[in-house]
Image 1 (tube, rainbow, N blue to C red):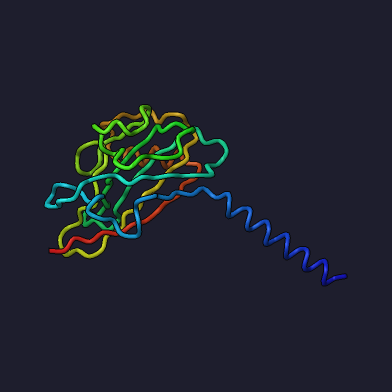
Image 2 (tube, rainbow, N blue to C red):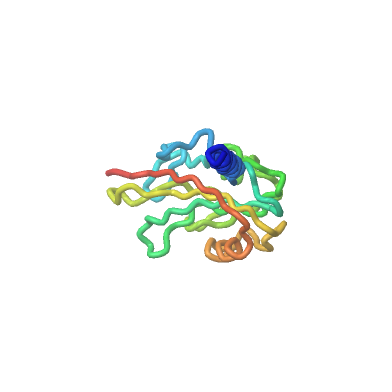
Amino acid sequence: MQKLIFISIVFLFVLNVNLVSQNSFTLSSENLGGNATTQEEFNGFGCTGENQSPQLSWSNAPEGTKSFAVTMYDPDAPTGSGWWHWVVFDLPSDVNSILKNAGNLESGLMSKEAIQSITNYGVAGYGGPCPPENHGLHQYVITVHALKVDKLGLDANTNPAIVGYYLWNNTIAKASIVTYFERKK
């Protein structure tokens, strides 16, 4: 009898762990892999890529999510503070994906309510990977933030550090994917 009770408890534990993991907040991409390509690479600063933002999808946002934000950050940039490549916020809670190249402001592919603010390139919208030549692999962390507010109350001229501060204060949960890129001479 004790063996049957033990097996039942183990089964319920495994079932519960499996159900929890299936419902975790998750970010994925249909076209972005473990290494960014020239499609995502910036076009400028010596880089000659297509500067197309990746397609992104997320699922299982936590209860209470009122909006989303998406960021792309390079912690390996030799700046002392990293490099913000993409900052999007005020995405409505019913949005769960971003189309490829939606980071291009002229494309019209981003949700109308969303704001794409300036990056460390000094302009709004997506700015792809462009590490210094021969600096090795850089990691690019793309994160979707589930927020407890409808709007952050910021505009497209807000710098990434201020947006980050507001995200830190309003994030319920976040999910990330990491890609890498290296620029060789």
